[in-house]
Image (cartoon, rainbow, N blue to C red):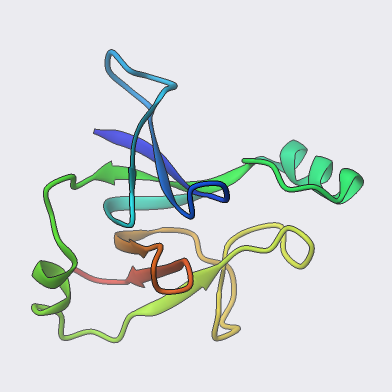
Length: 128
């Protein structure tokens, strides 16, 4: 199922919003760990400008992809021979998601692991 995932500041976990199906537009779950396939970043420039103007956070950025609901971190992490990259987004510093190692903008990946309990880490796997 195609979803939009963002960090929920009130629940301190990831919120998952359906982008298709009967629950389209609704939050369908909260998870500490989320696996997305064919992931791309999404940032609303209007929402970002609202943050800059009001100095108050709002939901305007997240990751779109296909949710692998039944997958676990260990299933992916134990079978990887790649070096993952972390990404971040800060509306006060950037207009898009960027790699934390300063190698530029993140434009999407075949596989993304999102871990709310590891300092809100979003780990990008550039190959599957």
